Amino acid sequence: MFLLENQIPFVVLTKVMNLLHIDCNKIKPFIYDNILATQRPKTWWFRSMFCTRNHPVYQEQLREMIDVEQPDHLLDLLHRSLTEKRLPEVNDWSQSNKCRCTFRNVTELKNLGIHFKPSSTMSLAHIEFRKSKWWFSADVNLPPITVNDSTKPMLLNLIAYETCSSRDDAAYDAWVTSYVCLLDTLIDHPEDVTSLRKAGVLENCLGSDEEVATLFNQIGTDLVPNHLAYLEAKNSIQMHYENPRNIYFSQLKQEYFKSPWSSLALVGALLVIALNGVQTFFTIWPSKDECDSLCAMLKKNHHH
Image (cartoon, rainbow, N blue to C red):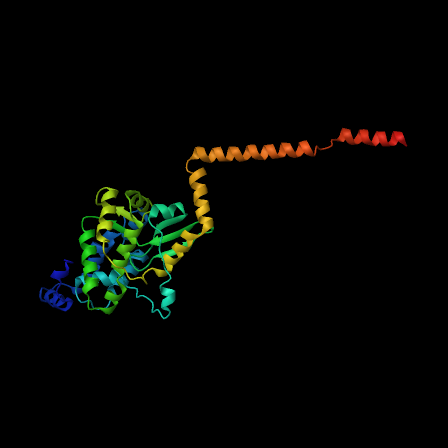
């Protein structure tokens, strides 16, 4: 259905459906219900959203898909539905080239206080970095995805379409390619998949977490993303990653808060130090009780 080489013009498809007395207006809701909605993780939040067509989020996202302008074919419709956001025009290229991403996988970023959460949209163009109320912590909202047997061919066909598309925005923006490259960066080991799965960003219907990691590492090989994609979020992640305070706190957390026992040992050591400090203080500057004050007053009066 979404093989690049099997695509026929959408106009031809609608005419064929009209000849067969099939309602063409059902194409987009069908793709949304059976392709896009099934790519969302089946967590309780998303289940509650998609279990009823009357849910406002469901209605809003379905309306966004229906409002998509006339596509070239079904694969183009799927691509437009996943990437409705255009990249901003860049006038200052020196600013756009500032991103030097040296951060690596989810596990490394998690140790530095960056936590991943699912975004409320299925658009691959929306990735957001948010600082939390604690200076050493931050959240990154990623579009959630379900990885199953159809994920790899679907992504490969979308990437191939971006590569050879005559649409200027599809070829220029390359959102799917950039999204896969970002996941390839964030996922190095099965532990990274496990973290994303526990965060509700990814649902593994493929097999082991190692298989999912291998899938994205294979697809991401030799891909070239648009360097402007997710530029603001990647710059924010990089700044957090390079912040010395965050690095120091990460080392402190890894050394003293890795397990409950090490945390208790640290608290116990701090209590011992505090008690020793109090004891030393009163040894050097002993407090005078009421009896000492009374004796001093009597001695003073006796001399008078």
